[in-house]
Length: 332
Image (cartoon, rainbow, N blue to C red; front, side, top):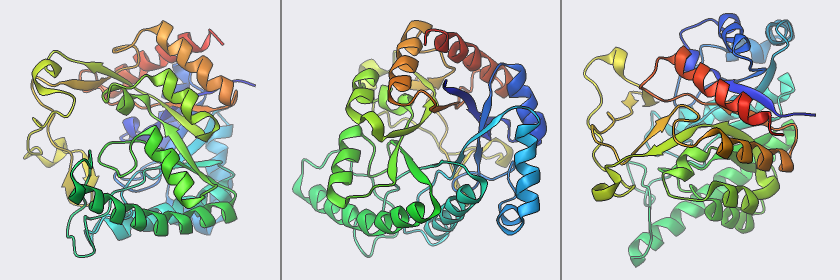
């Protein structure tokens, strides 16, 4: 038994699946988490075909088997409760198809996010309550939690019927973005097939102790993203809730989608924090402790490198992260 040292294929989206797997395998990785919808396109999985054809599924799994690479999860990160009519329904559709496909492929987990509804029944846009110290935000949050409970209890049942687990990434901009928020939601709803995709990068910039978070969440952790964050000098005057992000690029080729016809904003020039290659924010000794803590929960956990460091091209950044993860895993 050992951790699957994997990668999230989004970073190699411009390469055919077979070539992307070959690149990752040459770096020493032995698995791949594949995007199948939500915020970003699905270049490595023809979902319609895979849902409709056993032959297509067999051939697809054969691409992994031929390389001794594990299909280590499907990813449908999105906001299925977004009130925007061109976003929420599509992400809901993609998620439900991902659950069905995971069951058919024999994949254990689907990675996604809790999402964030609007502030009230008539809201046009999603709303993120960062801190409900003012009573009105408490009312908004209570409404949002009711919306999430109704939606995710149905998804929980759907996942159970498919023999699949849902792994939420605790990502700010979602209603559930902290370990305690997740545990409170489980207690509130009684969901049994929803756990956590532990992506430490988002907890790092919130200044959390990652090992303490792992200890708190325990076997609620179903999947892991190996991704690092570096706190920068800008935090001294901006705090971690840096609002200096600029408007998305004019050039469509430079845009990174966050939803249909919506894009991520441009990173600040002097940020409070940024995502970096694995090892760029925390050294190998930290990642060794991280791997040890994860393996103590599940020695066969899927641990996927997610490369989002824009200081390096996709292959170089993935390679640097893979080297750190492999070195850290030697401490198991």
